[in-house]
Amino acid sequence: KGADTEMVAQMDKDLRYFAELTKHVNPDANPDHEGAGAAGGLGFGLMSYLHATLESGIDLIIRETGLEEAIRYADLVITGEGCLDAQTAMGKAPVGIAKIAKKYGKPVIAFSGVVKDGAADCNAVGIDAFFPILRSVGTLKDAMDTENAAKNLSDTAEQVGRLIKILLSRAN
Image (cartoon, rainbow, N blue to C red; front, side, top):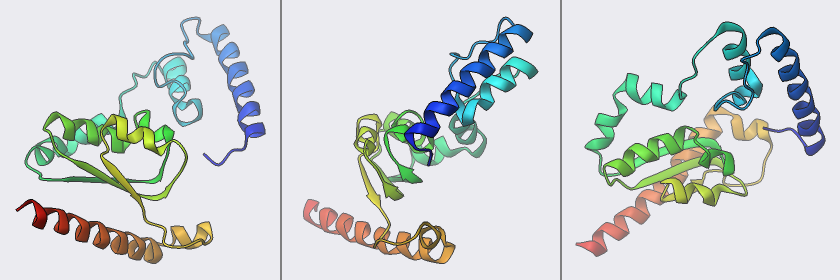
């Protein structure tokens, strides 16, 4: 994230070259293996040189924390990410959580520091609604400040809570 088009092209070229070199050391190395490109190719390196097995991070967290059991008995699932975009929909943590929620028929909302183009793809993979928390234009430093982020999240969550309260009162 944060790389411009030219930087991405150069990184892709460098990673292809690294994959070619790796094939000389380990002919079984597969740069197209699922997860190989994660974290800038870290998965590829770990599999190719250390014979590691990759596992979904969100699946590991869900299993180790017992999150699925909590989701099973929840009325509403709330998740979030710093930046919600098309990459989120390709399997990041909020989508992993949404998949578990949908298994139990639970609605899912997400809060995000910022929402970018492609975020609507998240709706198709289980996030029913999402809300950016930034309240005004500012610097990245201001947005990342813990106190500001907590206030922005709290203010946005309050407004979403008010909306839920209205909808529930009309349903009864």
